[in-house]
Length: 382
Ligand code: V47
Ligand code: SF4
Image (cartoon, rainbow, N blue to C red; front, side):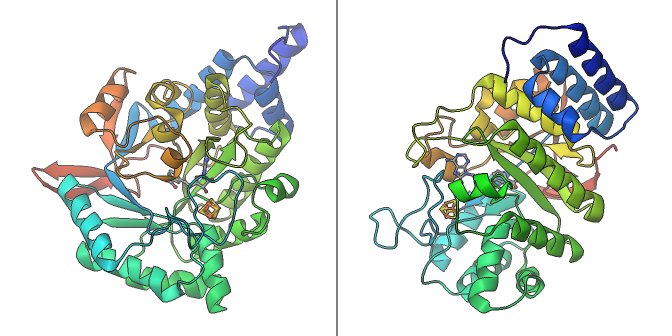
């Protein structure tokens, strides 16, 4: 980012051109994206992104009541940005039993959670049946809770160990209760950068192919981008563009979540954390480039509550949720709390002048009656 950029007539003209495109709801080009990423004034960028957010989601800011389950941290891969993984014989290695899973689901029920977010490592010794059983046990313990589980990296692993195609794997998971898929594992699509981060795991083409297969089966998914490590602006814009193209084709993505790199306890711990400027810039840039995504999530766990709150004015319309039991970021040094209460989330949203809206995973309004909940109508405006 060029902090010495002078606001020359060329700059003003370029910004004006982009503003006109945004107002006319025209798609921004790769060059527009590079300009916004590298040169646009942060407040001007945020203001533009905020207009798009308002057009798509009016005055609502969404959150959900969710709980995380990371069934194992044992992983065959060694992503350089990961502080969560463990080797089989590590002291910190663990794998959940069925009883531990049931206990977590019971806790979710007590908390009134509508979603359980399930991701973890790719365990050297566990068969596909072990992963399938996790979804089955959750679903049998609480058929109402929505299971958002397994990233494309996991689906690719299951396909590898079963020697079956993606749609077979996905159908098996659907049959035992999978509801949707999270957006993890996307990292950065650019092949050169990706090979420096996570050489052996599912490549970008596979990530895209798996999300396409999921969408074709009617499974809604999310998408992420890990930023603030070794990537450059051109890689970020390329990443957003690849997502936008798949969304044109399938319409199956629900929300995009930019993930700020947390370096502590990773092999990249010499890289400083992204700054607040960068966090807000990426939120705004994502909102503007991903014109066919309904939602942009400011994941408070990694942004911190303060930046996440401000991000609601820079294009984000969603704060994720209560996020009980998150470990991936906390292992990488996130100093955010382990969870937020609904009251804290309401306060964060209301202070921005927005209306908090509890949603389920599929962005339908959640209606609460004491301890029970049900689903209302979809709340999406666009
Ligand atoms: O794929 C791992 C990232 C992802 C670090 O879909 C790290 O609703 C930063 O995808 N610093 C998993 N990032 C988390 C994820 C997610 C989170 C919240 C909501 C949703 C959703 C999805 O976390 C991984 C990787 O990209 N990650 N380690 C780290 N040190
Ligand atoms: Fe394994 Fe996921 Fe960590 Fe990579 S990010 S090492 S795949 S747990």
